[in-house]
Length: 391
Image 1 (cartoon, helix red, strand yellow):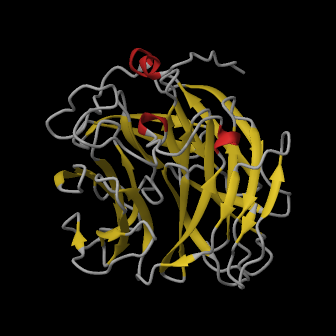
Image 2: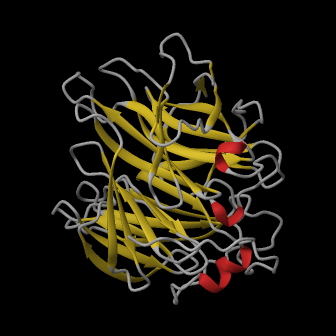
């Protein structure tokens, strides 16, 4: 592995859980974007050239172009939402095109409101609406988002740790229904639909320890399985698994971790990646940074184009980017030229067609609601059917 980290960082630390496989060929220097703000996320441009760079500032959420050399071109800023009161953000591609964006706000009390926004492939606003406003009994901060052919949604935490409400959204982002669920962690986590089963996977972490908690929910949004995966030594607290990508038969999880006794301020910590296999077993852990207290980073995000993985974080009120070259051999297929499609949320489909080769809906989203069973769609995409071992 080639490590090219800045002098302020030490060479990345790798932990190989199984077989010593190195999933990352090269980890580049931390790149400063020069943009003030937070909640940075990037997505490949629909043309295939360059990237879309999104970030929060001034209560809104904005867009700038970013080159393939990862230079953010700060001209012609486009504010996407028309709002100036938003706080926390989550955004994901929809498989057949466009993006679903959810955000929190503090209208009368802290974290008492949430909103949704639907965009086309070029981030033109298609619709926006409140999901709920002035509801102080639920925690809307650090909310996750999912957009799939059978289920779109977000989640709001409850004052009781480990309780949440899964909120189902229609193709425009409006609320359809809500489902109380106990025993799962969604605050600062990730929602992801598993293609082979249509199950909703919830990647979360508690407020102590270094375990990644993965909850499996069936089509009725009932928890059918829970896995606890210890990622780090007990002296470190892992938190904020805010982005997960499916790459072939593996999952890449971004998260933060820190020693709470070391003097880090706010939610600052160091940046880590974990790689899980198809059975959701830990294969690899990688530390990307060695920030010194009290400052660090937070709010990690992931994006992929071919064999290039980008890890975004917020550090000192400025988005930063770690470019990483993935190892095609370790992931089991040729990543070059692969756009991800339905396999991961780092890249969406482009060109106005859905990922099954048909035409997309008129609003650019094939994210239908209702039946949660996606087997008929996903299995048609698989060259090889792999039967999952159920715990």
